[in-house]
Length: 106
Image 1 (spheres, rainbow, N blue to C red):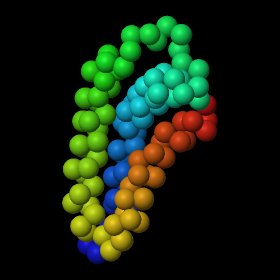
Image 2: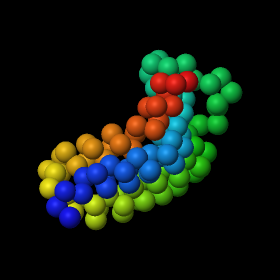
Image 3: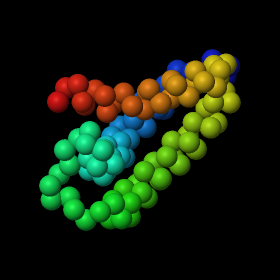
Image 4: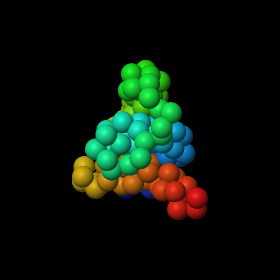
C-alpha cells in the first residue's frame, strides 16, 4: 500500500473526464467576466446578463466536482509515499490532462 501513486494517477485520470465540464465553465465564466473587463479577452457580445446567472448555474457544478475530487483524493493521499506537494501536483495534472488533450486536438 505504500506505493499506490499509480492508483491515484488512474483515479485522477478518470476524474479528469467529467472535469472537462467544470473546467470549461470556469474558463467561459472567466473569459466573459473578469478577463473581458480587464481587456485580456473579447467577451461574447450577447453575454450581458452579469455574473449572477453563471454563479447560480456553474457554482453548484464546480463545487460538487471539487468536493468529489477532494473526497476521492483524501484517502488516496494517505496511502502513498509521495510528499504532499508531489501528490497534489500529480493529482491536479492528471485531472487536467483530458482537458489539455481536448485543447491540443481541437
